[in-house]
Image 1 (cartoon, helix red, strand yellow):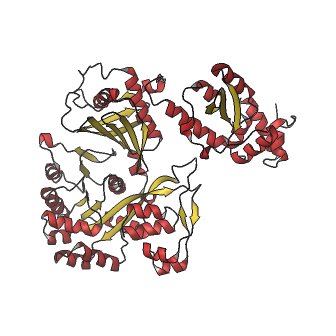
Image 2 (cartoon, one colour):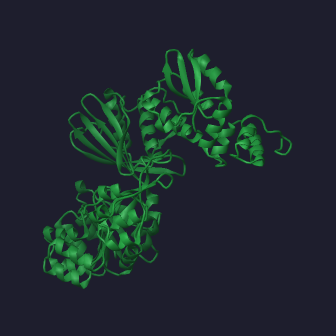
Image 3 (tube, helix red, strand yellow):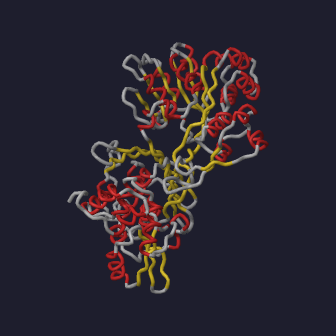
Length: 568
């Protein structure tokens, strides 16, 4: 059947009359929908030929059916287990609520009479349809099915069974307990891991309490609850995760660190860093998703301002010196370092790293997992590196004077050294090293660049809306008079079906300070971090607050996020 010799009928004709689509497109869409056995409305929305809202209102006029905005509907009101999951998927019909013997369902296509009949037959309830926008319906159905699937029932998905955990070694080969071989538990844990990957989360928290158990994901820097299994399952979930990460399942009194390599297919696998913590009511287990691709994104994707990027690249080109990256846990320090290492990773360069544990696996870099139990700490690894003819050395974290001293000596003897520290800002990093006991003259001569960073949530480009803020407030927030006079538009989050509360993804906010001769003199005189910060400001190095405000001016993030991640 071709589009030329068909007559438009029903909804397709109505959409043409309402000028939502042209006749030619309608004919092609009608043929395609019929051949592929899908709803005309779904096809039009998926192929971006028409807006879901326009289609919903047009269909409502034709069939005399009310329209509901799913964004305004409280999903907690939905009845549980009334309609079978297969029927929901088959007919794209979402149960909304039950009133007496009447079931109200949300559909995007009012012509699907089969849905009414089949759901009525299976439930024994009278069915009333309510029209909704097709794109919102798709998301709502997925959320509904996920919420119905958080208990241990019906987890017989072949995908979940097929996941393979790659063994690192054979130390726990003989582990065999009924706790860990419970098939529903295996599927449940696999589902939680897969869902976290799909949601783009960075961490998973498995938390036992006295009467409840909950699973939380950290997505775009914010924690949210996703599942509440029975507290009785806590020991089994804990045992399963410990077996996967090759930890001692009999040891529940001390924290343990491990790693999971989850094979999704023959070519793709995802790494997780695992840490257990004995709490009052059992073991809390936190998994960090390690993404090797994040280091390969390139420096442009990280969110550096042009001047800051140039400073970083210039420091990487130096034959020796020390680059320090600082910030709290989860602020993207490792990604910044590995982005730099990836730039330096050439056949002519010998690169060695010592980490606890190795988070990102990169070909061409010699990576060492420090293991204090066997006497391989950061100082020991560093000493060994210096006998290995290195060009670039990366230390996961400077925690003590010994590590700091060796790293600084390496930077003074013709090596490029990169490392991280847990401090709030670049000037505070310098005073922290002095407080550790590193002589001021050594810091002044070895450190070449300090990067302090935070991660702020990106505004969703689809739904962000402009906001008017008085001049006095803008000045109070830290915007300069020049910036205000030039004029700019600030945006605030709104929230849509394509994002999470108005935000989607994250952007780096950086304070990049080059150690200039003047700052070196201040370090030598053991100046305070406040004095160093003033000098850095005079020399034109934006602090975190100023960098964050630039991101707000560019419309990348909101003023609320600036407030959340930086201080004035």
